[in-house]
Image 1 (cartoon, rainbow, N blue to C red):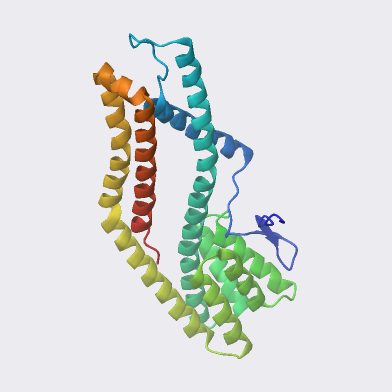
Image 2 (image 1 turned 180 degrees about the vertical axis):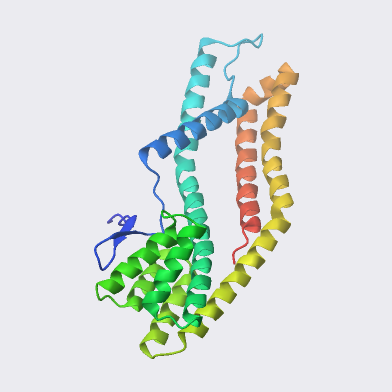
Length: 281
């Protein structure tokens, strides 16, 4: 069975400029190492809390087998945690980048709408929006790079609607994708661009405002959810430290099986809680 081809991080534009593919995010080696080591350490410690101190002697003291088992447990569970955390972290960074692009795109539409309403043509409007965005963000901002590429494309005879559609396809955002399609149709048919840009800007602004209100309302619940995720780890650690009989119980075959089942249920509850808290616009 053929492996699925990895989606590129950059997609060449008509000017052969590598433009960001916002649908994916790939961490560099430094980021991967730092995130892996952090997850490795946390996973290894949690592994010792749940599965540590096996093969104790009759008096409850650690044996050589206990030391070896602790090392193996720390390393194995740490590696699993590190490998599992990398794609989760990449997804979070990708989503954050898309959210940032969406906010910047809304500012772009506002600046473009003002320029078009003042009677400028598309080339002049893009130039005006470009300078406004550089002042509002920075030269390295996502939308500034995108508008700069649009301006270069216009100067080299590339259709603006083609570049707008390209941004929409790379953005992984339905609003930007739909705007690219509507803009292309409107531009080709000589429609009212000022009205299209203004209405799209208003719609995206409303969606962002509603999303921020929902996020604010869920902040306390998300904090409580994160704290609750730590309770099982803290509880097991306290039980192990408070009584040697509890520690022996965790080290028994029945205790290991019970802990494994409990962790499975805990993980399922965690995934369900994430889905409940993940409110999409």
